[in-house]
Length: 96
Image 1 (cartoon, rainbow, N blue to C red):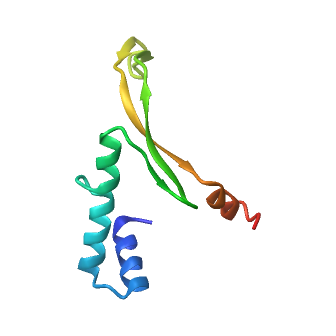
Image 2 (tube, rainbow, N blue to C red):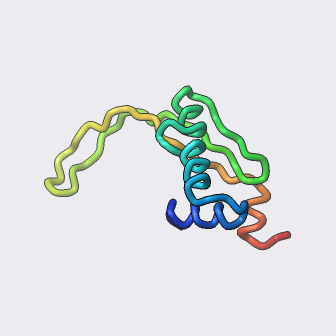
Image 3 (cartoon, helix red, strand yellow):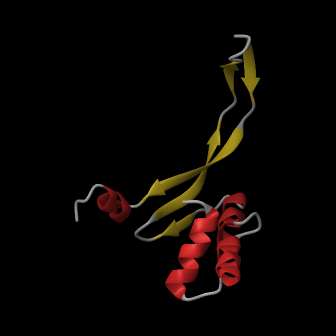
């Protein structure tokens, strides 16, 4: 599902205009949104029944340039991580 499709679906389900639905999604997930803002501060966002978004530090490491085969240094970074909740996993695996 693309962002455009998500906006359309949200607008239909909540009887909102597409502009209002897009504004809502942008407020949650956009560059200055709630979820990225909390992750940037080092926090986590937990949505009960769905899962949690958090960050995970990645240590510096050595990698390999696929074009030349030469060893390269990869800097330390912070990666966003999503961990699904049990109800979502059960739904996907049709246990309930």
